[in-house]
Image 1: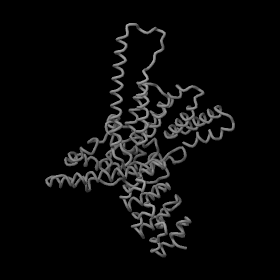
Image 2: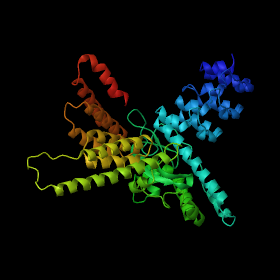
Image 3: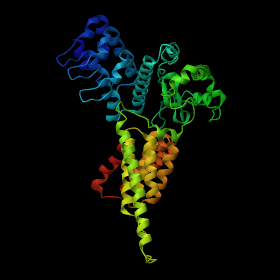
Image 4: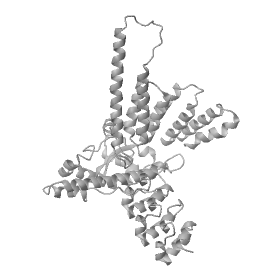
Length: 465
């Protein structure tokens, strides 16, 4: 049986044995332009050993598209292959991050389109940011005069390292708690260790790794870079002190370099590593895809136009009241001009659109503006979803609980709010409270319709979780 046949059948042990006996079989190709590596990337059960062997015997396979124009990385992302295998494919052909499918989608776009696991999406985004950062600095180095070209070598050479490879541990590196259904595994972008949510709430920029935007870091890295931040016991941090001191020294050397400070100022949002600043994010929306920022600029212009229109309408309403000689009766209901309500709705839609593009900070700003004009539980739900996606779990919980108090008991939207609140509590590590909230969501559904629709309702409640 050929290597293609074994890969199609997902017989990984037999395929690995064949590759070791007949190395040339790694270069077999079928009528669809599929190499054994392509077929291996279609199945999430593929083993790391098989992919390593295929890449070692035929390195060019990682950059070879099939007849449909798809690289192995494109296929692997769609199949939700394990992160260690994705890292192997990226190491073999880093330029695959920028490669587009015939439909114009990058691997990162595919990850978001197919709602890949957050761990996989985060890896693709970090690697993409790193490559884009080096590309920008390479362009800067070419445009500089020869008098400063020697200073730039620190930035484009040994000064910036690639992000560390993630360690896929089964327990939290800090508290040693085992990962499971109610304890998610995250990874520190600074040192690569596996940590739980409780010990990875810090966010900071890591310029020495080519990551100028805010990244998730473990409690040890966060304490090293932010002495005034939350701390953990000394006994739990002993095992990671050495790597954290090394990272801190590298970052301080990088930030103290005069050449780095002068050359990186157009690229870095700040010159020092600091805590999350919402105001800075609002003025500099983060990008989560390789698209141009032109569409975001258009949205910002639309928001400014709406604000100017709102101010003009308010002036017209005030002038109309001044011209009116008779005041309205005291028992008249207080109404809001329809035009103002339209502005609130438009800002709501803009906030949702920005959130879909990954510009969470700007989306949160617009959704809060909409709520400032008119309290709307639907807007509050979308705001909570965006806060949850940005990592502000406490803020998301507070908004959801307030929205639940505003909704009538018979409001069908309460079910999705309960479900979202359960997800937030689960992400915070409060499994008991999360289970209780999910039970409330199912209980709410059981009173909302007849028995014939119960199965569909329960399915919709748990599908998102």
